[in-house]
Length: 242
Image 1 (tube, rainbow, N blue to C red):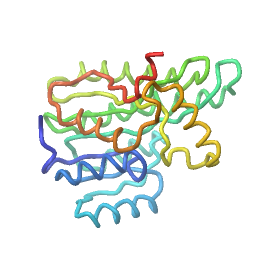
Image 2: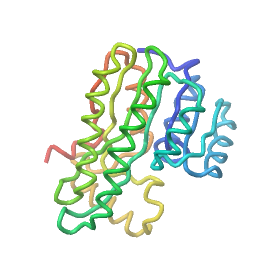
Image 3: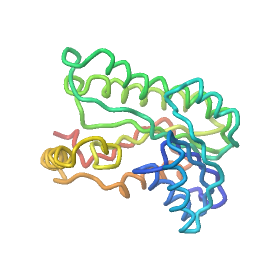
Image 4: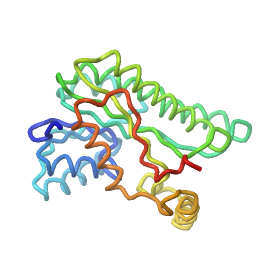
């Protein structure tokens, strides 16, 4: 297993939730952190929290990754890195007939097209022996979350194809969590979040939902294991066994 001491890690969507937990854990192991996110205020808050733990944050990049023109511009200016983690990916509920077409297009743009562009840009900045880790998802069906389901399949295909293309220089994988209570759902009412959590706790064989620490550990594992590439690691409590 490789070490993270002295490595440079870029996390897109790393100012809160799972991405922040990845930054925190990697930083404690000695990695230097670069954070990219939409809000400069949240990036500043994240850096302050990490700095308080003695974690070095070398760059903050305020950029909306869904704006592909801005994303191209930002990647031209950032430093090269050893590992990249992308937390990018909108979610939705509803089947093909019920969902609004604009919502379907938005989620596919986010999960699929934006991560493809991230992969293309990251491959040019990646150090020898580095890795790229995307975030997909598991636990849903096409008829219940049509565009999210398509996006998750697309990210898995992206990890496989990109892994073959950039080998042996680097590795590409994806982590697939099932539904987890994180700041991603900040715009949803607390009652609705709790209702969703209870639903998943009933259908997951382990009878509970995950916590961000359990999810973050999967990203670190994929970064540190030098012989895993083109794979999807589902952190879902066995929800797909049913």
